[in-house]
Length: 383
Image 1: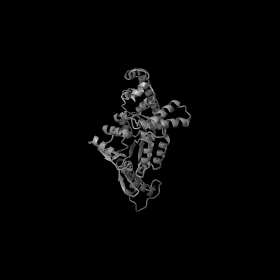
Image 2: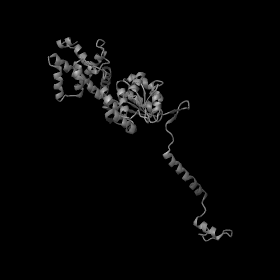
Image 3: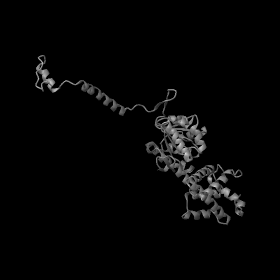
Image 4: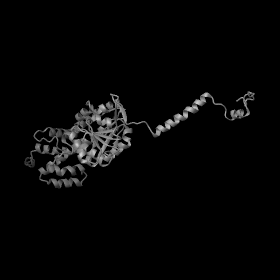
């Protein structure tokens, strides 16, 4: 700087030093520290990008650590629906592999054992509680049969909520009341977790063959997660997202199931009438299947109904539960729902009929209640 300003060079400074100072002036102290520290920060940041800190450890209340089962997927509830859904995850290698175990729990432990026996070559980890499943997995699906069962498992001391922390996600596939879903969402989020409602349209058959329809609402980022989409594709034929507000998936499901229950009630009455006036039931199923009113449900259920075969795919008690929830929803918003209300009443009476004892049979068993209440000669002989 002195040379540039035309000042005199100190006598102790030789010619070489003058040249060096001119070409490479002495560093300011702040600049020196900047050049010394910043490269190390950049290197540190770059290294962390390739070697991020482990995310599979989390402190517990006892300051110990729980290790995640690698990139495992959890599944809670292996009943009529859950067993088939879990099977689809395994069959399609979405879970149950060496890298991605399927971690399961069921209220009846034998269901877990049965699943392991059915898929002996798959990596299935059985836990002792729902809490253990949630703690071991970043994403857990839950499929429980009733609002009562869901609440009990969700809020138990060793239940779902007890295992939720930041970084854990719960996808609930049950058909519950809208208020139930919203409460669960609030509880999960209050503990730092993520929630997605995903009730399904479909019964036992579609659950086992990967043909369910998922009706989702809640966390869009969770819905879009690659592993979640892979799971939906393995378990279903279609997935719909109704928005970020939890409750809309449940609303869609109740609309679908109340229509289905009403269709079954009307179908049963029509078959009973046909047979009572001397028409061949099988021939009438053929006619129905050829016109505008044809339905996969009629084609599937009709032949079994004529033979009194009501092996449960969608139990009557669950079908009635959904119809009651739908009727209440309609009343809540002031929608005229008289036809569905009558169908709900018929399913309720069938469910509560102690002599028939058909609550756990398929919802097609409402056909037996229709014949029981009929006074035609055909119905009397059939009963």
